[in-house]
Image (tube, rainbow, N blue to C red; front, side):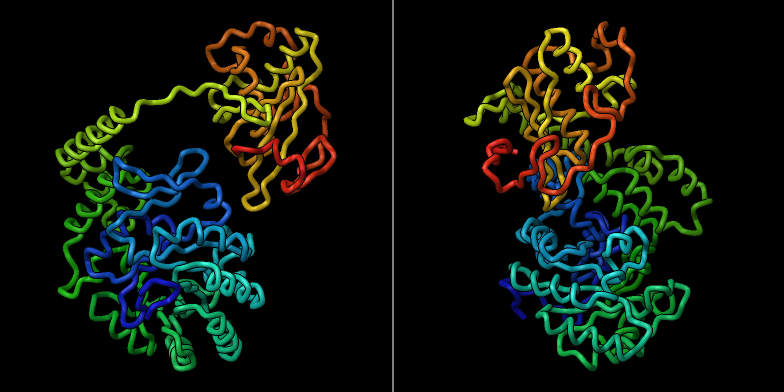
Length: 493
């Protein structure tokens, strides 16, 4: 079946379910090694993804989607490109489409989470909260099907009423999606409640698109042969496995489960090779160990505070050292071929002096900020107070600020997650451009220490109470949208 330009068959497939904190790259690759046909990444929130920049990581041979704080939100590689489905949490069709277009060249499919019952998802109108808004479901899925080049799927839970469930899935099918995954429990039920195979069967018999059965780990799936039994019990096209795969991803292996020690060592190797954060690696290994957490090896894992210590706990110390040497050698080679550029302030055609800087609160003493330093300098020089013009980008709610000092404008090219942070970065650009101290730890700013310190959340020289910034509006100035004649303020952001 070719959908939206990519062949991805959802019939008779073994699928790794999307699982928060579990479905990162090492687990997905391991599941593929053991026989999974398709792997879903963990749910990633649309607003978080829209803050990310796509980066080709030549050291790891991966594609990374990196947040403004340099944290990797989503990492993928060529090995899984044709079999990984990107699952997003969203409650807005336009944001969903923007995320799909951001990742579509690096994944095989796009999925919308419509079944997660946890508060972190539902409180934003995402996950299972969407089940009570069929109009929004239809708009999100229709927009994705029409706007992306990848097959679109969604994952739902059943509704209390069979009639309501069937009406919903028929409406979902009409949006043109390629397949639908159904967790056979309603949003109030948890794994200890029995999965409702009969409702999944009724859905499969009603729809013409593939139905993927999910929710069988607790009651049905203990070994590989059980996956087919669950598929037949539900009459589904395919089966999506969550907890059973989390406990031992070799559940996908036709020859039967592999020893847990072997599975964990293979997982750790992928985690080190792809620079997975040790806390995530540790979490996934703990899920595999389960009742063995109190064993000597479990206690070593619990005490580990780095990837190296995890490797040593599993007899992989030499592997860790060798892999790190290889990665360091690749990194050194890349640096030798690409000399590091020195960041200098640059003035663009709009007359704004720009630098790529960000405000890190940890680098400054308590109650000392770049804005305070800039205000103090303006007072000493008998200059008017700095004036900040801040806009919010509607699509991802990020902020960018321009500060005017002595009729010159300064701005960071990086967007921030709050108005206050954006103004601090603009102040940093001004101070660095002038060669002035910005209040960082270790800097000598005696004049600041003599003044009465202001609360860290106050804007020095500004009003004590400010109205919150509105999306697409400038603060402290007549309101304008990003599409106005004042767009030149934000060129290059």
